[in-house]
Image (cartoon, rainbow, N blue to C red; front, side, top):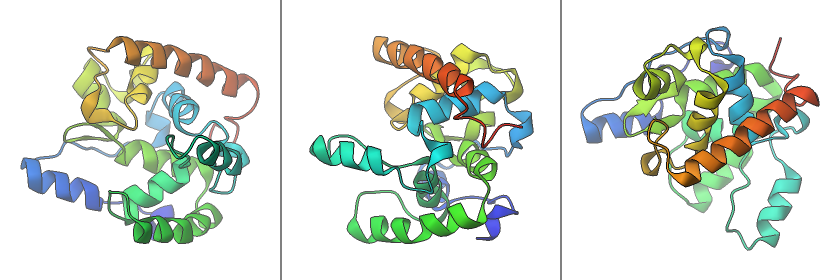
Length: 198
């Protein structure tokens, strides 16, 4: 739980990708150095009720079950646990560990910290980890300079960044990014961004 205060130097997935590719691009940036719309975009894309749950979104889990398991129900907290502490891949042992660790992260970390760590360890392209590397890679800008459109396109890459591009968006990515932009504006207006914004 020390990563509540200390920045993770790397993650198991970054290490495995670095070994596979021979390189990995990632530089840590504090949340204050990231355009606020980027955090809102990721929440809108991945976990719209982030500020309202304790690590598990029961409504999303029920919807995923009703859908036959074809959609994901992982919260940002669960994704941080997977990215920082565990390995990638679908297996019951990993899901069990994720379910065990997630409540402790929610208990010890702030919501701002969860978003900050997520934005610094998420994969945005092959070998490109974290929003600082992604902003430079796709748009040639620092993360604090990301526009609403750019932030939405980055968020639209998740959770399949190797199959999508923010700089050359497919019609699917464009449509998803527009939906994310609308969602980011909505959660700002209705208070669902309050737990991670100053």
